[in-house]
Image (cartoon, rainbow, N blue to C red):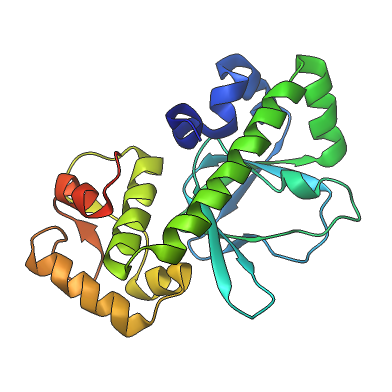
Length: 222
């Protein structure tokens, strides 16, 4: 996924004016931290246009594990893969912080795309999300715990485009463990190491004190 799409989502492909028209076509919704926006297996029939906050997308695998698929932020679409009323949600979406969105029925979303010639933008967006999902599965399956944790924290920060340190992260150690499928003791051990190195700040919350060094651990460019 390109940097523009990763940071701006569907909004980056659609363009500013058409994005405003899309938001105006929907009904406002708000969600508390930890609240479900969508649940895997529920019926579809509508789309959420994420206008504020960051969310975690995961899916329950056949073996019972919860696999992280992606992190999303303002400018992204949620639920567009299950637009038909009889279609089932393929993943669960949970708010990492207070989130706002615009609700559109599938029919209303299709009418919008027809009106603004937005079908190509949607196709490109869906392809980028598929590539992103595959990247997550590859990275988080084969990387060691320290790198997986650093990658996750960098992704969360990138969605908010935060740079002023210290940077609070809307994930607890338990949330990190659940998102990555790691043992909580493993996450606690790695968080302790990052704090001793001065990369994370002290205290009960996860706070990034040195983003450059965290990026070095993740070995990615934020």
